Length: 407
Image 1 (spheres, rainbow, N blue to C red):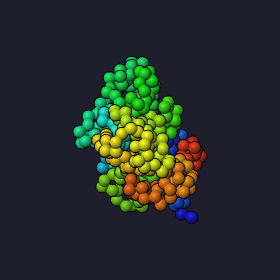
Image 2 (cartoon, rainbow, N blue to C red; image 1 turned 90 degrees about the horizontal axis):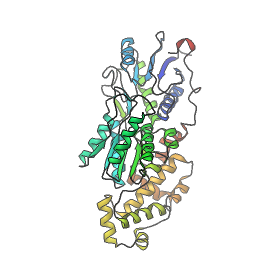
Image 3 (cartoon, helix red, strand yellow; image 1 turned 135 degrees about the horizontal axis):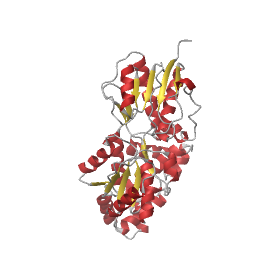
Image 4 (cartoon, rainbow, N blue to C red; image 1 turned 180 degrees about the vertical axis):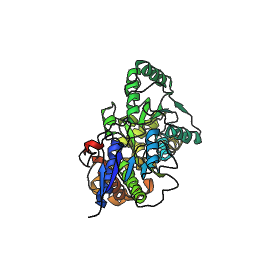
C-alpha cells in the first residue's frame, strides 16, 4: 500500500454549503482510497489557518482572508480555493459556483413570476469582500432595462444579530420600496433578517415583498417564517470538482489559467416567493387556477371556464405580464413541481408524472427537455444525495486533525 496523501480541508461544517462541499471532497477521496483528510468543526466566520507544523500534501479551503492566502503561497503547497473571494488570484487556483450564473438564475426567476421591481440586500458577514454577486444581479436586471434598489449595510456591522439601529434602517428601507417587489438577499442568513424585518414593518411576504436567499442553507430556510426560497449551488458537485483539481495539482500538473466556475443548479421554491406579481385580477385568478390545478391534466379551455375572460385577452395578458402563453405557464408550473419532487422525494417517475399532471412519464420527459434541456432521470441522478446533506453528520465522516495539529 502506497503513501496516503494528507489533505487539509479548511471549510466550515456549520452550513449546508460547507457540509455539502466536504461531502463532495469525501466522495472523491473515497473513490481514490489514498487520501487522509483532516478537518475540524468550524463556523463559517472562523478565521481558518493551517497549523504551523502541518506537513501535508494539499489543501482545499475557503480563502477568505489575506493571511491564509499568504500562508498557502509561502508554503508553495498545492491548494484549491472554493470561495468567492479572489485573494491570491493567479497564485491559488479557484473552483466554485459561478456568481454570474446564480445572479442570472435569480433575475430570471423573479421576472418569470411577473416582477418588474427589484431589490438586493448584501451580506453583513463578509468583511473585505467585493460583492460581485450583487452587482451581477443588478447588471442582469439593467440589461433588461429594470432598476434595482440596493440596501447599504453599515460599516460596523459584525454580528448575525443586527443592532437596533441597523434593524430600524432595514425596516425603513423595506417600507420605502415600491410594492410588489422581488428581493434577493446575499444568502439565506441575510434573507432571514429581511423576512424578520418585514414582519416588524407589517409587510406581507411574499405578496408585497418576495424574498429569496442567494445561497441555500437548510436551517436558515426552514426556521424562517415564512420558509425561505433559495438557490442551490450544488456544493457536493463543487467539492468533488475541487478535489479532482487538487489531485491533478498534487500529481504535478500545472494549475489552470482560469478559475473553474460551475453553474447554479436550481431555485428551491418555498413560501417566501410563492406568489405571482400580476396587477390584473383576472390574470391573477388564471395564474392561481393553474397553480392549484396543475396536478390535473388541465388545458387553457379549463382556465376559460373558471375565469371570466376571453381567450384573446388571456393570451395577450400572459404574454405581456409573464412573457409566455398560458399553455407555457401550465408546463412551467408542472416542471417546477416535478423538480421539487425529484429532489425531495424518492418517488418513481410514473408517480411524479401523475402528481404533476402528466399522463405518462414520457410526457414529463418531453416537457423537462423543453424547459430545462435535460431529463428527469439525469436531473435526479445529479441531485439525489443532496437532499440528505444536512442530516448527514460530517464530523466523524472524515478523520479530524490530531490534537497536536489543530489550529
